[in-house]
Amino acid sequence: MDISDTIAAIATPVGEGGLGIIRVSGPDARRVASSLFRHSAGKLDELQSHRMYYGTINDGQSAVDEVCLTFMKAPKSYTKEDTVEISCHGSPAVLRAVLKLVIGAGARMAEPGEFTKRSFLNGRIDLSQAEGVIDLIKSRSEGAARAAYNLMEGGLSSRIDAVRQKLVWVQSHLEASIDFPDEDFQTATDEELVQALGEAVSRMERLIKSYDGGRFLKHGLALAIIGKPNVGKSSLLNALLEEERAIVTHHPGTTRDLIRAEAELAGIRVELVDTAGLNPAPCEIEAEGIRRSLKAAETADAVLGLFDGSRPWEDADTRVLEEMGKSPFHIAVINKTDLTQMLEWPSSSTPPVCVSVKEGSGLGELVSLIASLSKNVTTGGDDEPIVTRLRHREIFLRIAADLKRAAEEVGIGRELASSAVWDALEEIKRFTGESYTEEVLEAIFSEFCVGK
Image 1: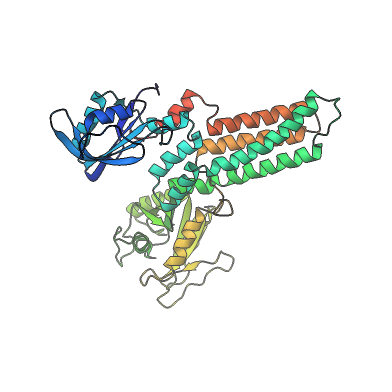
Image 2: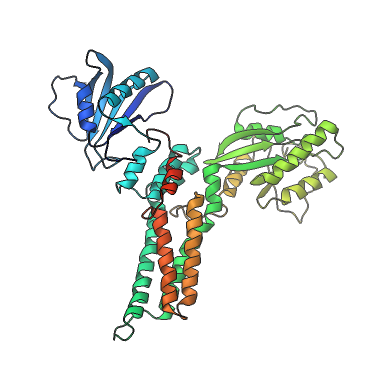
């Protein structure tokens, strides 16, 4: 990829809209824009940085569209290059026409993610921040958007930089004692080095631990709703979705296949899976539905077991409790609390949440519990970053392993400890992108759309 030329692309989503933006970046951006733009006030000597101009884009004979144009002079732009953004009307035909003129004036079509890639290669952001950009674009819940924004703004990078600084201190003492063993100056003791390495390991392990919750934030939580027939599974699904997604009747066994739907609950994207009732004496069709239900519960991130509080405990309830307990993350819910309660909950089981789907009571507490499942292994406070990318987790695992090895080898031989610390520092460079391969860049930036 040549980053010395000028690129252009439509930066807004495909489809009609009130506005659409053409983004141009590179050394020729100002000249390209000036050759096509006609200011509403007449002759314009030169575009000034960080000012918006009103006028038209012209094809040499007539105006193509009425636009607002903004020029950002390097390095104070997203790419750290001269950048122009042309706000057009959001007609796909208009945007294509303006882009064609921009390309004809000397720019070339940008590759997917090339604007952000230039931002990385020009040193404005590190590689993890670039990944935060694509995660923010693709976020599908408030929680995912917050995690992506923190990554994009360098929240995770700052934590890793703090680890790097500690390792630089450790390495300086290790190298000094290796290179000048006979010199009369004080270096850190083995105990001080081991303590510093232990603190760095603890920081890495907190970040590693946050990944399980982070992947739920990013990808969503798959939650299977299981229960015997006619306990209100479909009614609960509809209540959580706030729409009539599943058919609800008084007849048991209405749901015979899986029904999947997405909802955002307390800022977390959740895929809800309504399943067939676990009938102890099913017909052939119901038996297939039950098989699929059990498979859905087995593969889901979490399971919600639903019970009817208005009916006595039955063998089918015992089976639901057993299936629910197979998932490490599960919630027991007693429904129909608006009716006379006849269910005796097993004292040895986790206390359930009590709701009335019909009246809407208890649903707020249930939503909070569902959302908390995605956070059960995240770090302790809101200020702590959450790891949402597998690439980061794998790097952090290697860093933690290198530092544990270094701590073990401090007292054996400082040369061995120093080698392990160097390995950890190299892994940090892979995280930030200071050390990268074209394959890694291609894999990351291939996720981007054209225009970003």
